[in-house]
Image 1 (cartoon, protein in one colour):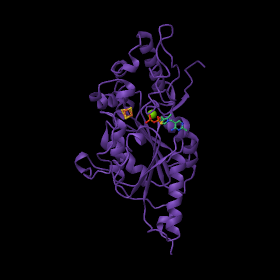
Image 2 (cartoon, helix red, strand yellow; image 1 turned 60 degrees about the vertical axis):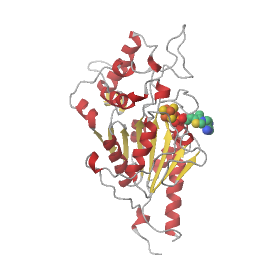
Image 3 (cartoon, helix red, strand yellow; image 1 turned 90 degrees about the vertical axis):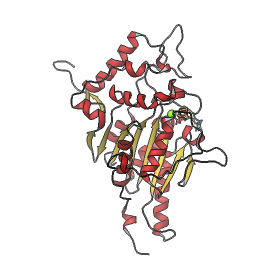
Length: 338
Ligand SMILES: Cc1ncc(C[n+]2csc(CCOP(=O)(O)OP(=O)(O)O)c2C)c(N)n1
Ligand code: SF4
Ligand SMILES: [Mg+2]
């Protein structure tokens, strides 16, 4: 069989949606799941696969988006889907992309571009599966998207803290006590920045939030169109783990961006581009105080004034002292100082 462009890394051409009215109506993640009311990660699944379209294979590592989406004999996935082990989203993406390419090359299946998306949670991606994701991002000959849905805990096993859990949050591994109030003292891992900086041949890394649905879907479309392995990090409010009324999910996503806690950006061929409300901040709009975001969530209910101030100082540092604000955490030298 003659070689076609498919074997040279052809991808589907997925033009960006030009506004919400242009978004396609078909759903590929529909009813049949049992995630919590207000679960943003479920919305991320729905938008992710809506953006990708029907010629897509979804692979998902263990976590809420596996367990709550696969009740016996019931599934919300309209496209082919497979579960993979907790730390394996990277390996599953690479293996599937390579397998498809080999089958098409041997003429065992029709040669056409098929999207391969592997998702993982923060536990499965930012912690346990980081090595496999890193390996996949170096294999530029295979097209795949790894999407990390970050609900900031190991949620499925009852909200244990992960490397992505914010400073001071109350989780089952960090309950505030009367002797020690703040049990989790580490700052959140900068996963997207780390993966972008560490994989110079990966053509596309982006951060997204489903509170900005069209912008989010367009980043998924770009990641699938550009070619090679790509990575998207999505911040997902989780009513159960973050302890808030489910009706606040959308608002909390917005506040995470408006306070500057979770910057929205894309790194395309090594060039950083901020977008949405984050771009407005970079262009001079004042960031909202972090307390507006933190105090809406029960996981920070034990915070006293000094904790809020510490959190604010750390976010200020991200914007004022990081070499690339909100993206790369190398510190700029202070004028006249160290
Ligand atoms: C190797 C391995 N260790 C532990 C588990 C138990 N386990 C299942 S889901 C899960 C939590 C995963 O957290 P995350 O990736 O953040 O996804 P979430 O549950 O938050 O959606 C854990 C620890 C497992 N399935 N496999
Ligand atoms: S625990 Fe959080 S991530 Fe898991 S299903 Fe519920 S809201 Fe979604
Ligand atoms: Mg998680």
